[in-house]
Image (cartoon, rainbow, N blue to C red):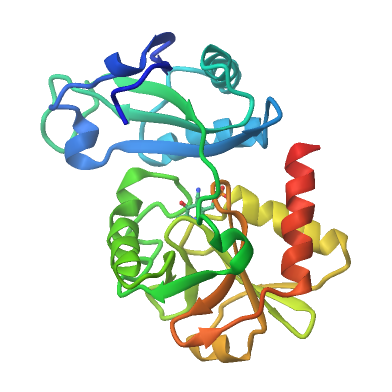
Length: 285
Ligand code: PMP
């Protein structure tokens, strides 16, 4: 994936895709001092462009560093990168990290903060599950307590258990894994938030120890605008049996129906389909 044509924005300039490299002593590689965004551009417009740039700044601040480009600079740089690659419909990955420098220990205040933006075509995150309904495994790893990690940040270090959970799920033929939290409540999937439907009302975990996704917030707003009751609350594992529909939300996942979690089955129902299509219309509006 590194050996291809294209341009990547790195620290203020466009560089060749093949040349967008970092040194092996990059602090982030050793200590996960890295934050990132996943965004999608539709018809030449990045959905929630500013919100994503703001969240990147917020995530960096959670990890105790400042991105040396303003939110407006990042917005302009994203547009420049899309244009340089001739893309109007693409996934956008903006990220920042502590680079190589005099500090090779845990502390890294003297190392430069680096920033980059890459864009590429990325279809359905869950492939044909987008229409059929995804099959989810149940992860053995739990989302940790908010006292152990900055859970509102979109930071690389928070994804270690996500990658491990997703690999285990894929080895069982599943698209993803649903994670419980440190208390045993339903949390989210490894890169997407989760929603359930019961008797026409929507239930979704309260984001008190995991990322409150931009898509999640958008979908909660869309549901409430439709007059649908949304309960943001703690969800016990035994409640899974009583839910009729389930879907995932995320920038990459968009709105993806879930057909199965472990031994529990869900229908790809009307509300799920309506929300998926409303979201599709909204991002392309
Ligand atoms: N949770 C996790 C762990 C994620 O990686 C993502 C994707 N960024 C989400 C939730 C959804 O967030 P968003 O809707 O902002 O893309």
